[in-house]
Amino acid sequence: MESVVKLLESYRGRDKVVRTLCYGSQLVGGVLSQKSGRPSEVGKSLLLFSAQLSHCRTVLRLFDDLSMVAYTRSYGLGRREEDGLVSCISVLTNVADQLYYPCEHIAWAADAELIKVQSDRWWTLSTLLWAASLLLGALRSIRVILLLRRKLREHRRTRQQDSASDGRALRRECQQQITMEMLSVVSCLADLSNAVHWMPPGVLWAGRFPSWMVGLMGTVSSFIGLYQMGSGGDGDSEQHQATS
Image 1: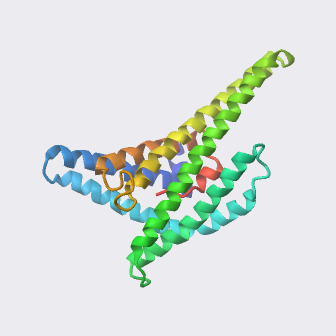
Image 2 (image 1 turned 180 degrees about the vertical axis):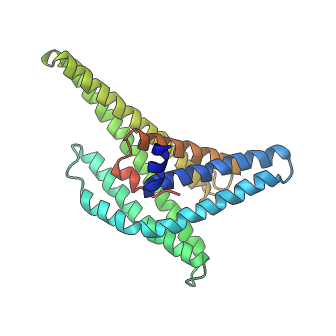
Image 3 (image 1 turned 45 degrees about the vertical axis):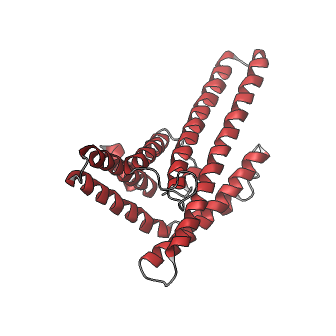
């Protein structure tokens, strides 16, 4: 109970819980609606609940710009990274994330009739930026996995120079990081599949996912996020990555 309360008291933790409930409701609601072959009251209610939670998250993201700016400034050009490719990918990811928020804000404001512009193009642009961020995130994790595996191979060749305890600790740490990065790849690809689904018709499988499939992909990604946060593997780049 204490861990759940602690999770809900933090903004990022609460967002991950709401996100999980949002996609979980869409998954169950979509399955119920499809199984019955006719409109299911429970399924319809769950889909409406999911839509409201999604709208809630969109409104709360109106306040994420400053935290994203602060993170982007602190990361800079990624000089802290040991690998140049990782730092380049991370910088591009930060740019995509930074641009995502104002585009989504404009689309939201247009739908709310606060400004008089067409919201469709802004939703499309924000989805493209989100997809770019997810693709870059997956590529970054793959690169980190390759670097960690190279590090393990080099350690095996020179392990006689290290103590047994130091060697085991290094291998355990690298394996844990590899596991987390692999989960990040799965999470990014699951969200990317949904991002493509929300793109304009004619783009790959845009608009072809049933509700339960969107819910399934989002639920997989959300549970991975919760697991990473609980395991202490949710880094700053993941915390500030644009999510929908």
